[in-house]
Image 1 (spheres, rainbow, N blue to C red):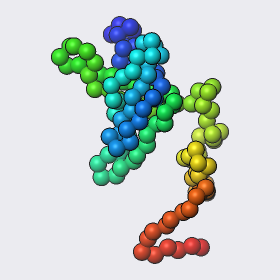
Image 2: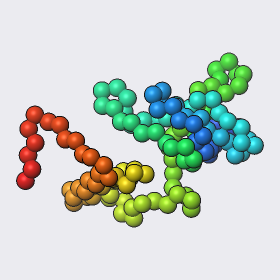
Image 3: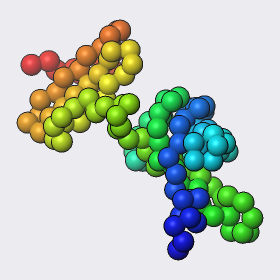
Amino acid sequence: MDINNLCNFFFVGIVTDVNPAEGTVIVTRPDKNDRTTAALKVIQRGTCKTKDYWMPAVNDQVLCLVLPNVSGKGPGEGYVLGAFYSDADKALESNEAVRSVHHESGSYWRVDENGNMEIHASGSMKLTAPMIYIN
């Protein structure tokens, strides 16, 4: 496949609009004079029985894939494959064995390879279960 053709399918863009209910975003393409895409579906880790939900924020830099249209005319379905760290948006962790989610509000959760977990809520916290054990 020709590299120029490949660049039409994979590209880096900037999120300009988010539709959380549909799981889609609109992306601006700096490589195409800031042309905007149609709604792109955001890839999730699970969508059937076990569901995972994540949406990139406006101004996130994302890697996108637009499939060729089976009719041969214009682009087909498009997807956001994920966001990535850069000079503008640095990683918050320096240990590859840590998983964390940090929200703009200041709330976060963090777990490491030793089983240590930290949860910080900048607002209220609700726990719901038939029985809650605190040791």
